[in-house]
Image (cartoon, rainbow, N blue to C red):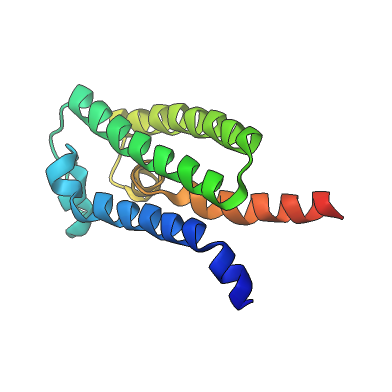
Length: 148
């Protein structure tokens, strides 16, 4: 096992660096991205009206954040699996999920009543790298099944 760790120390360091970059995005989210919903969802939002927002700036902020998280996720997948086809497939999934979630988010913002829970979770999938947490075990399982 120690021999395996020493052989893969470059991959381990690069993987940890990518995870650290995810943490930096999260740490500096208020300075880097326009998102009036960050403070809204940290407060007692259940009985509050939605904050005023600029749709185009919100779209650009979400695009930038999702794009950065997606690029880091694709890099992490490549470091872990070294499979270009898997990374390309994941890239297509990231784009498709972004379009779908963005449409749902803006529909919810347009037709929202006082129940903000669905809005909270759709936005969460856009601003946090949740898909990588689903892709890594899924692709690992796929890799194990294909090696049998």
